[in-house]
Amino acid sequence: MTTDTKSLPRFDGSDVEHIQDAPLHRGFFNLDRVDVRYRQYQGGWSETVSREVFRHHDAVGVLLYDVERDAVVLVEQFRAGAMGRAFSPWLLEPAAGLIDSSESPEDVARREVREETGCHTEQLMEIHRYFPSPGACDEYITLYCALVDSSDVGGVHGLEEEHEDIMVRVLPFRDAWGMLENGTINNAMLLIALYWLARERPALRARR
Image 1 (cartoon, rainbow, N blue to C red):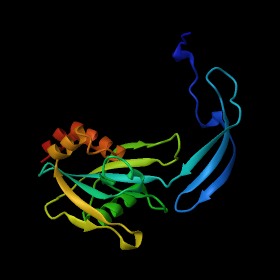
Image 2: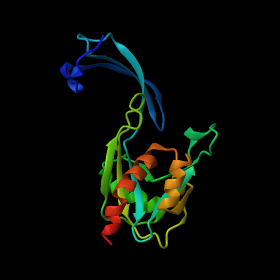
Image 3: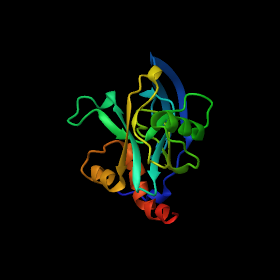
Image 4: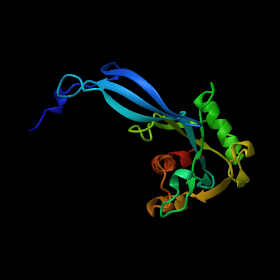
């Protein structure tokens, strides 16, 4: 059976009945059971559906790019969620952090870049806003690029009170792209940022 998808409705938040939340875990992150009903494409409403939702602060990420050296500044740190895989649980990522206060995403981005890499950023170019895993988590990420001078960047950074142990690495873009192609880079934030940079890099370098 085929359906003309042009005739199907487009749903939004008004097409969901949020019945209740039940807390399952409270800690650094929270886990809730969410009971909902929602409109269906074939018409009518679903039965009550229960889903576990991982409650996560929204986050920011910043890809740091040195136009003069055609290099990216990345952070490398241990990630518990990557344990038990064939690859290392130490991942290369953009500088990033959680929005857990009244700060704007831009202010959080600048602060996290300073804490994690020692770089100071002025202009932030927004790349994308996206849900990394909306089937299970309510986190929403704002991803930026910022131009920096990487000549004196490197070493170990992070806040001791947050148990951060962050190695800052400066990689030529061609090396980072090679790591993307061979699967060494395997987290969504950095993949999205590097694909964006591959498209925008000629225009950014033309500004020199």
